[in-house]
Length: 129
Image (cartoon, rainbow, N blue to C red; front, top):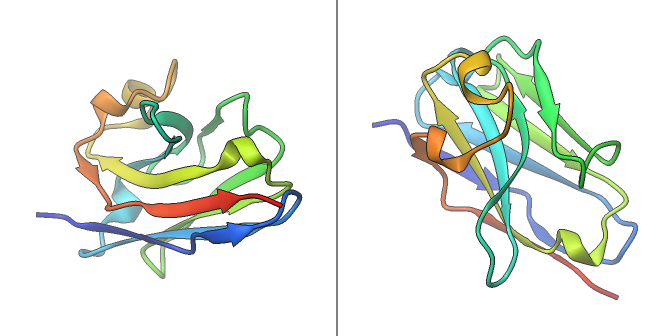
């Protein structure tokens, strides 16, 4: 059973940056569609970005477009989420998720958490002054 592990969260001031990482227990992330989700306190997880197996297709939610960047490092079996210009509303637990289906089936329209099979435990990001 594939396990995903996020890291890189922390507490930052507004305007700051963080780089989150998602690694897999098996060297297969390069074959999977990967998504990042954010769960604010008291809310459902929100899909914020998605990347195809080969990294050639990427989608961002409007709330993070221009500030967040997702990238795959196939050699490291890791997916990164660079988050810049952080706002207080970015606070939440960030999860990576994966699925053995093509990007076009999973993220072409919306980034829906119900389409992903494997989930990490999450990493907390807190943005406050």
